[in-house]
Image 1 (cartoon, rainbow over the protein chains, first blue to last red):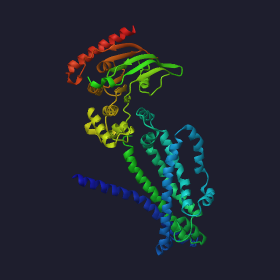
Image 2 (spheres, helix red, strand yellow; image 1 turned 180 degrees about the vertical axis):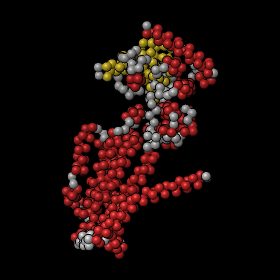
Image 3 (tube, one colour; image 1 turned 120 degrees about the vertical axis):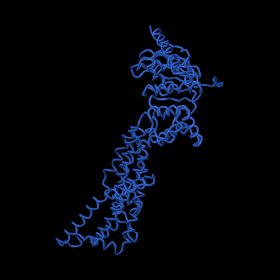
Image 4 (cartoon, rainbow over the protein chains, first blue to last red; image 1 turned 60 degrees about the horizontal axis):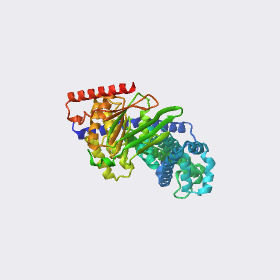
Length: 270
Length: 252
């Protein structure tokens, strides 16, 4: 076999195995939709209680543009908020690792991000940031930053003290120790945090949009859900929820793939 | 002999002690080490010779006494290679230069030269886990040499390796010293290794470490690479025996 043929063969094998991995989830989704349709028609459930799968699809296909625009708005907020959570979480986690005293006094406070229900502070966000994107982004950050902080801190704590000593012998400054030693050694742990917080980010965005989004032609998915609910347009709620799930899934998928590529390089030989 | 010997690092210890809590690890050591010399420190395990070496490298602070050394770069070679697993060998070896702000192109060039010194020319782009323990240790020596130190401190550098690799690396270290003439201090458990490497051997007492014998080895094993294996073996044996006698005499 020529090397080229071998590479092609390997690619084909990978595609096939990916397809095979998709069979199960697809079957589950199809079964769920079928069960939904059967339930709907056999009990003649009213449309505002439970729309039919076909009805949901029709609402979307008749005029997809408000949904797609809303999806775009939501995705932008989610990505910006998640990025801020990543950078901020890594910086905060690193700051906490500077000393035990700082960690002991500040870490419990960062737990607040995790403990206080977002709906309780979301009105405050509106007071501080006004309606619109900034408040939504803030809500995304609050919901998704904690796993990044916690995993950064855990990674930094777990690094090899012998390498610290090496850097001390080489006369490295604090910044060099952080950038060239502490962060690279914590990559595996940080990436785990990123995966968790990628899943949370979209939840934070949609929740923020419930309270802080503005209506109009560029209303994000959270806003579409709220307005449709008020008008009992349950089918529109279903479309928006499905698209919100797509945003969350895309963000999570991107982070998973990116982290797998990164880890393949980083964790060689461990 | 190198002409710039005068500018090379020499080390002077005056009444140096170190205690960890109630336990005295090093007790009032006085020493003068000449520039360009190769000294071995031997003694029972846990006697405090590593602590002494770490004080010379400023990894520990003496509880009492003074260590003075003439200016110049100091490198420390640990018992384990301590390479960064996410960096290639070349980047690992370039690390000391990177941390002192040497420009990228120059530091990679110097790292490549250091790797050549330890026979790792063909391994620039490999990662530490792809190498044997001996190759990793070689790389760690290259990293210690890349900043052209005037003082090289080695803490049982080859103790984790098999005998054959260890001999190879000892010969290489010795040849490097012949060529570069840095001041070298090695802590070792092995008398043959001390006899093979060093021109001066300091024997330490059990804890707290004090110098009980200061022995000049007959410098017979010069340029070990050019020797036949029989001659070399005979030489090391002879030097080891002489050293062992001296140690026993000194401790009597």
